[in-house]
Every structure is written in C-alpha cells, then in structure tokens.
Length: 107
Image 1 (cartoon, helix red, strand yellow):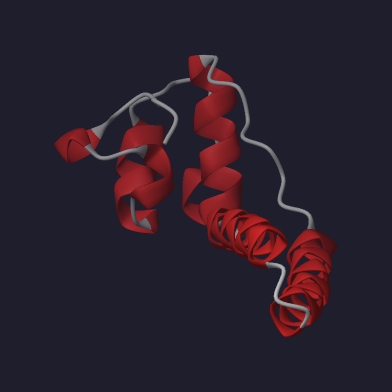
Image 2: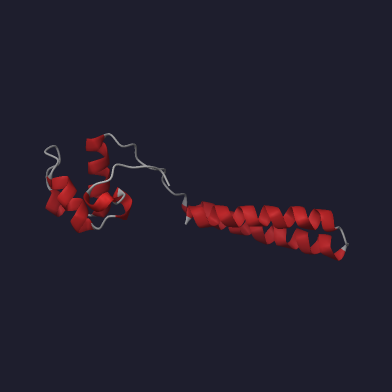
C-alpha cells in the first residue's frame, strides 16, 4: 500500500469515512463547498491541496481479461497433466497463481 498523508486517527485518506474526510477538508482553507461533496470529490480535493499524487484509476476490463487468461491457462494445464508433462503443468500452475494475485490486487 502506498504511503499517503494521514489525517485524523492515523488512517489513510482512502480508508476514511466521508465524515472524517469532511473534517480534514474543513481544516484546509483552499477547499470550499465541503458539505456538498461526496467521498470521491473530497479525496481528490484533499489530495490536490496537500500535493499528494492521485492513485491509478482501475481498469474495468482488466479483471475480466485476467480471468479469461486464467481459464485458458487452466485448460492448458489440464492438457499438460493429461499428456503427463508435469514440468509444464507446474509452470502453468504458477502462472495461474500469479494472475489470481493480480486480480485480487486490482479489485
């Protein structure tokens, strides 16, 4: 997890509730209209005011593509096991595990 500026209660900004974000935003004089903002607006305004770079946007199709690749790898692994090629089966198993970790981090 990337280190971010921590406010009330030593919590990262992304994990704060809207109420906590509003309290942090009220302390910053550059931000106006705090009470009318939602969580995404508050996060971007606070990060912009404090000079924190915005995090990467998640790609909606990336998880779907990874899961399709995992399914294809599982088929290839099953074929390798059927042909008694254990070396390739182990390689496919490791690749599948790596892709599963990527889907969890992207979610």
